Image (tube, rainbow, N blue to C red):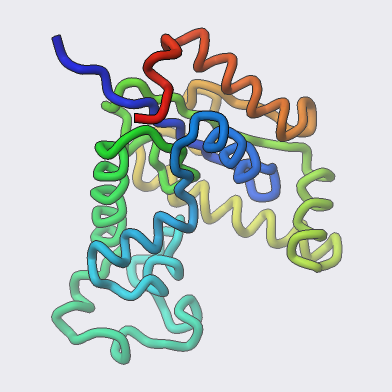
Length: 216
């Protein structure tokens, strides 16, 4: 009989919905690592590619990162011609996906975004969650976090959501934010960030024996 794999929870999210907060609660609940921006740092270490490249193309479909995404650095400055040829959007996605799979093989964890639900679709047990919120609440949260006004926050939200949606739809066989793409879709405007995390915990406990969700 095949030994059970550790639980992986993936969290997709609308920008400003509080998805990172939900993921953080789940990470603490189960005593497992949380990977969000941390994932970019790990991919960089494992590939030897400057993390600004991955950060610049994080959850976007640009075939090649440009200098504006890299804080003014150009690929010609950062890499040789041979290495630049390897940095298509598909190649970066492939490298990131391999790192996600290695992370999942090491033990239970919570992964935010990066199409981890699709990359790990054959991992059992996997619980995929999508976090959403009403626009007014998202604007307020981004205004506070980014220190910008309401109009700027709304514009940024639309831009980031479009980028995440295009990235997810391009590299997966599913639709970003669609209920059919995830096990759970939760609106934090209705239940709050803590309430959303508790709903995920209840789902996990109903689905998986407790002995299989402890840190491994």
